[in-house]
Amino acid sequence: MSIEIRNLRKRFDDFDALKNINLTLKEGKLTALLGPSGSGKTTLLRIIAGLESADSGEVRFFGENITKQSPKNRGIGFVFQHYALFKHMSVFENIAFGLKVRPKALRPSKEAIKAKVMELLKMVQLESLAKRYPSELSGGQKQRVALARALAIEPKVLLLDEPFGALDAKVRVDLRKWLRRLHDEIHITSIFVTHDQEEALELSDEIVIMNSGAIEQVGTPESVYEHPANPFVYSFLGNVNLFKARIKEGMLVTESGEHETFFVRPNEIEISFTKKYGSHEGQILHHRILGQRIILEVQIDEGENAQIVEVQIDKATLNEIRQREAKNIYVNFLNLKAYRSDEQSWSEYVI
Ligand code: ADP
Ligand code: MG
Image 1 (tube, rainbow, N blue to C red):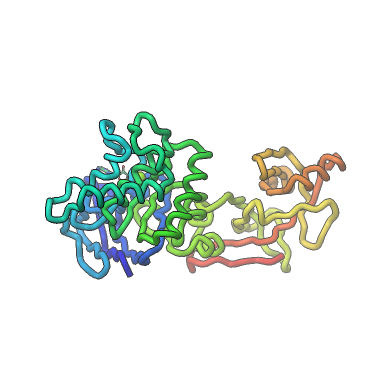
Image 2: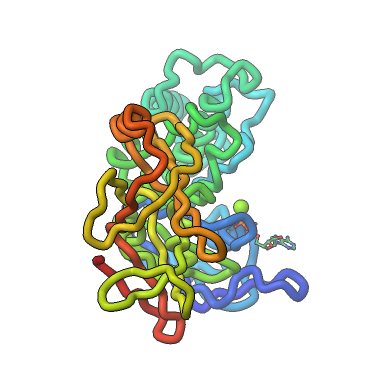
């Protein structure tokens, strides 16, 4: 196990930024720290880097306790959201910097530095831009230079804090895929901070979900998405409908009485034009076309029992709704969960 964090706590004045964090990160994997703004991701990353000190607890790298070591002795590369490139240095000089400032005994020869920089430029696909200055680069190119610069010193651990956060949507998605492929080649133990669940799900081998200075769940993207530990994780990882109803004789009913709150994702609801076993009659209120995804807003029941659910449908279904001029349809819940907070577990229902 490469990075171990034990009983880590950090307070800012009277605010608990990290509440007893325990975490083991796997060697050679790309782990995302995912959580809303203010959940403590950057604080945790900075403590791992040694840029911030913890109030108590331990950080171990590859079995060695490095809690008290300075950042430069930890063998880390760091990439921040805002391109911290040296403005007065070319791309080449930026990437070479970490090697050139080494003490003489550890410094590679000029030729070796050049070869290393050219290799890194090739890796980040910027070979033709070696002579440019940061002001002559796009945001995405700057972040690739920042990554090459971080990798130049051959760190044992790569730390990235929202590295694509300041880029526009298209570049973000391209760089995300690019970084994933790059990581598949170099397998450097990496920690990637993001508040964007799609980025974490697509990019990482493991996700650590944080909330209010604590860890909610750790697992592969598939496992945390399919088996969220609690309502926070469920809601944070994707869109959710909260639906009030109760189970009566194996059926989901919305009539007044004692209700439970069910969780169901928009893509786990189907619509039909004829009544099926267990389906609910609903009235179409609106639809929103979000590129490939179409979201239908459907009202189930009326008056004080009325509830609106969002259903994800495809283009063919939208066309059929239009053709039929359908206002009323049937809604079928494919996967319903209710959370029992006393037992801290989910109940799943198949209706
Ligand atoms: P995230 O990266 O998840 O957005 P941070 O780790 O930056 O969250 O911050 C966690 C909490 O700690 C926030 O509420 C933030 O305001 C607070 N915090 C972070 N750094 C400091 C600091 N140097 N002084 C006081 N409060 C801080
Ligand atoms: Mg942050």
